[in-house]
Image (cartoon, rainbow, N blue to C red; front, side, top):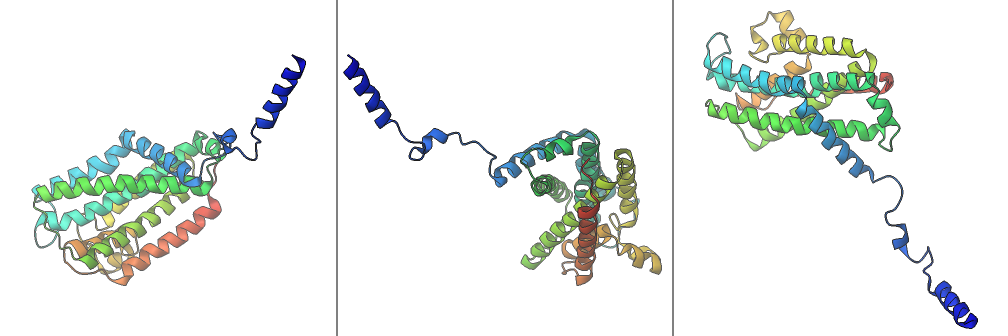
Length: 278
């Protein structure tokens, strides 16, 4: 009996897999998930939060649709020659992109910082780069929904855009560059100001850019010096570039890309230096 037990024990010890040879002993493997998986999970969460937020839904969907439908059907604003919806749609698309990548992002990030959400996320394996990448992906997701809804409404109103392959590429470049510029400005404001100041400042900038940025009408109707000044705003560059492609069927000049690139570089540099996570 003793020999049988000792033999069985030796056999068990001999047959037992060594940790180095049997990888199944380490499943589930401890440690952080790959970065791309963390970014994807955080982006899905950010997207759900943005779509469920009532104020952001008002800014990103309701106001642009009301402006497009109202000023397309009612002749109370001089939008230039041609069909009203053809002149209004590029500007309203620019406004929708700004509302998501600037106003909504600034207000949301500002209050996340105030309530300590960013501080707690900083204690997770998700890095700062991962958090910013997730926010950017969520913004692009909302913008895709905005563009689909606004284009569908515009087509129902009789919109007939002038689109060539080069024009499509120009529109994509303008949207991506403007998103980078507005997001950098939003993170700069949210990372340096208090949440209440960010809320007030973001709404004020939204109203000013709505009135001065060539959203509802071309800035050529402004006096000369004022037209030159507002041409340096990112919303003016985006709306005029989209109007050139979608309404006039021409490629935008290099000036609009330069304006957006300068805003992206300057605001991105300042945000990387001055952004406070707590």
